Length: 284
Image (cartoon, rainbow, N blue to C red; front, side, top):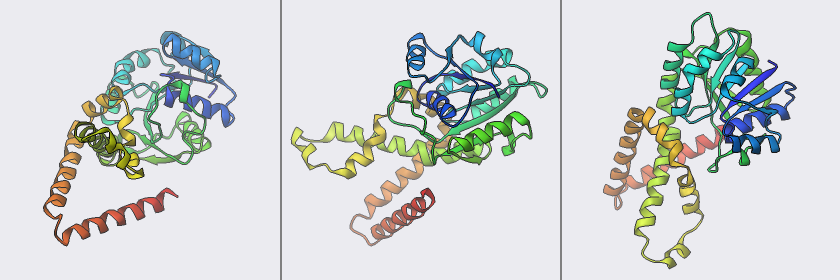
């Protein structure tokens, strides 16, 4: 792999480019983004050259699609036409079933390989200005090949080596399984945080109320800073799984409300604490 094209040089795409540089990649990294973004990326030495899609894709051994989901779906047909037969195309979209299904239609068995991906890394801020080389360190990097089995090809194996080098932990699963899981582990927390912050925005009685808020509120509403433009695509392409996750959550909230004065409330606190203890154990 000597030439990488980053399509969407924002937080994730820019951080992937910086991580490659940091961990020994000596080839060229091409960027495809707006003129303003490319100027910033060049100034920060995130990329080596800014090009159009038509110019960058035919040169690339690895094409890394780091746009929001709807833009990845829009650009896939053109990438499929432009890519080298030996190239690997991967993406960093937050939902996978729709993207992988579209790629299956576009990429022939004897042409470029498409491998769905989702780095479980990020920040509330967006843009190449906040990209950093260590963003993927100690995070999970999900790969979602069709059928949940990685292709046995040299480009895929080399890409996996680079995922390891940048400090991420690889996890392979099917696109459908990914979308079911992240609806619970990622999309539900975001919507819960957004809903909580919106309730407080509407219901806190006075400016003095902010003085009664502590670290728990800060932690619980951190995700509410996330941009709607990103989450719109996620909700559109994973709506059924998110709807199901929200139903589970609403049922649990109703159960808590019904048991505010009952011993069953203690059991929910114990279940919650047990989950956090197990989750934290696996995060270390």
